[in-house]
Image (cartoon, rainbow, N blue to C red):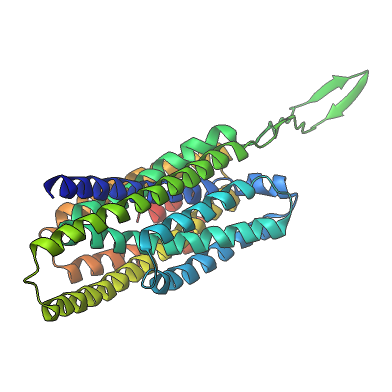
Length: 359
């Protein structure tokens, strides 16, 4: 029996590591996608308005997936459902860069959004169910993996972006002789174009999602077998347990599940707001009046995510001293102030863009 218990503990730990990786892979795609909007205009041969519409579809799918996941995970095997959703997300992540049709682009983003919302809701519920009162450090690990992906993803996709190097405003003071002719005050634009190769990082991310989901499926099948053996041993050793006590325990577990699901939904509402603000920041970086290059924009985005990681760590220390309502009020005040700065000055000034994004 002791051997079976040790095996179950190991399986539980491996499951938790896989769940943390699930969040990391999802964050890698989402945060990498923001910096590739210009490349998608080239791949799809369309305007940025149509490409950015995909952001709205992904967020819509994420909201639907968040609420749908609350019902799905309450009626089926949560870990297996998470694995299936992640597999669908991985396939869509591969398809999105290999097709030149807007309908496939939109469909893939909606599937990715739906799967993201469902998986992220399920992650917190599953971890809370696996570890009960000991789940806090593992939930923090999930959040940390998400922040880590925000730092890594822009740097991961940056080498595969297309490059349009333009040397503008080469105004000559007087005249320049050209084939026995004189050209006055002429602006020359020299372009060197390298095609986008973003299919490489997104294919790698998609394959990691699919392979992790397959591993999770096999692990869940194995854990079911071990759990049944453990239950049989417990039944032999604990026959004195009455049916009444079991019913009370089952009822308490159901109530706790509902609380965990509501916590997951609350977490997702906050996350979707943060994702929306991040998307707005990216659009301001690449399409505002400042008009950063793609490379500089991704470096800026990665730096901002690094600042977010530092402030998240600081907030954990502050949370020891402050009450939850105080932390929430501070959080909301920073969000509102940052939004006002971004909307008022973000598209016209780089310093204010930095300030608003940091807040």
